[in-house]
Image (cartoon, rainbow, N blue to C red):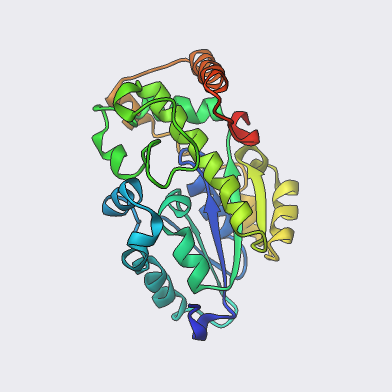
Length: 268
């Protein structure tokens, strides 16, 4: 049921995999005249909420996960009448998109992508889906989650770090396609991180979102970097970009051989 007193308020969310520029997107949206923007606002919807969507259908945890909608509503009630709430959070597509779409009416979705091999490289070097970074399991849904939109090649225990990361990334793409099928009336705006470094593209992007850019928009555009170099150095799990591309090609081939149809955008 929609939150009646907020029915006319606009909200913007992002669909992304993580390590694709969502923090930069939040900062960029926040330069618009009427936007108050957040990156992974509390509750972040990781940890126990990832466990919920890993082990059971969405219906079983919907009321518990509605804590996110209530938290957003409390924030929005402090806004001026024309202000827009924006949040970039890669757990949107896994843990709270459904409750937000039930509880709010005027929503735009930004589908944010980055070169998949670069995302994979960052995942591996940050130790995601490995003992090098056990906290990553609290943020990333299992490729074999009950709520997954795409079959993985094997159980999690039978996949190495590369294949776990790749299976997760492809599942996020499949979840994105499922979202568009299930919510055809919700406006979606597909962008690539590289495009957000071009002020002309950003101007058009803001226009599509009905946002007004400010001098801060041009000042920020192309400047934000979030490579987590210190964290990667500490984990010390370097990998080359060609190796990442080879593993992506290998996973795609194995999926096709196993009859798994990958999303059209999976290799983007």
